[in-house]
Length: 401
Ligand SMILES: Cc1cc2nc3c(=O)[nH]c(=O)nc-3n(C[C@H](O)[C@H](O)[C@H](O)COP(=O)(O)OP(=O)(O)OC[C@H]3O[C@@H](n4cnc5c(N)ncnc54)[C@H](O)[C@@H]3O)c2cc1C
Image (cartoon, rainbow, N blue to C red; front, side):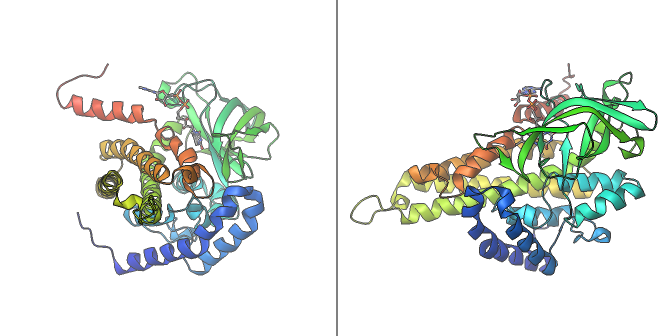
């Protein structure tokens, strides 16, 4: 593996870091205390600045107006942007839009690309991804109750989904629904584009997460699909290919998430060290940083962050060289390992801040609340651990049950 960063990437990362420090981190106090809808005009202003700097949509295809960076290159971008919750959204590379863009690019028809992909990459509209159901275990999504039944030229969709991130204000959802109930369990579901103003697309509520409902992009919705009718030409790919398409989307998506989490680790670590340096704990000027227990935390966090970062870069490198299938084990390893390291680093940073850490006067409480979910979405820790262990045990001749 080559660890050199090209001069082009070094410049891009420097520009992004400067922008995050100068334009985005100062917005955080407002972000933490006001609804997203009130902050939207200023977010739009910052997005326009990013477009002017020609850094918009770094990971998206050039032909649609993105920068066209490769996976490893975008991993570095994601790390820099991850230092603030506003980063990815302001640069036009936020989940779930980034994944939906990939799906539309790879599997969309020309009509779907013009109608949905082009404005999505341009940041003129947002989208959401509606797969997880309230009543069935999302960890095994082949168990799916939502149906899309053919009627004339349409599909009629019925079902109850939740945790549809960023549905509030989205233009369309990519919905996973059963179209072929008779097929084997991996070929029953399809992905279908559903405009959010379709009658029968009912956004029930933004689910309060750790006490905060959120709104706009920063929210997770429960949605009832009630006789929701869309044309059959809204199907993505072929019928029954929903899981195959989802697999395609998940490998690179996990690299983006994990490097965003490394960015979060860097930010929390920076706050930890600054507070330890400055917080006096006796009249003689001793600070927290003089205490060995805090020094040990600092060294442990530094080691864990560096190890996690190298693991993610290695996984991205392997995906680029050999494809997501060959890198399956590396992808599962980073998914649970980095999520847990991030949780540990945020927790220690919060602890060092004492009572201040529990308030919304720093970004730490927000990170503590919202990033806990990293151990659940895109495959819970346990699911990835089981997957890794099975792959390893197969090499020891242990057949799966
Ligand atoms: C903040 C957030 C955002 C999300 N965004 C989206 C989105 O945009 N679109 C969308 O469709 N979904 C989204 N989700 C849903 C997410 O994908 C699911 O929560 C996840 O797949 C887990 O499914 P579940 O909640 O039904 O938990 P379950 O499947 O019921 O699992 C519960 C727990 O059981 C354990 N477990 C599960 N399977 C196994 C196993 N095989 N072996 C051992 N232990 C196991 C794990 O500890 C797991 O956490 C989001 C979730 C969160 C929290």
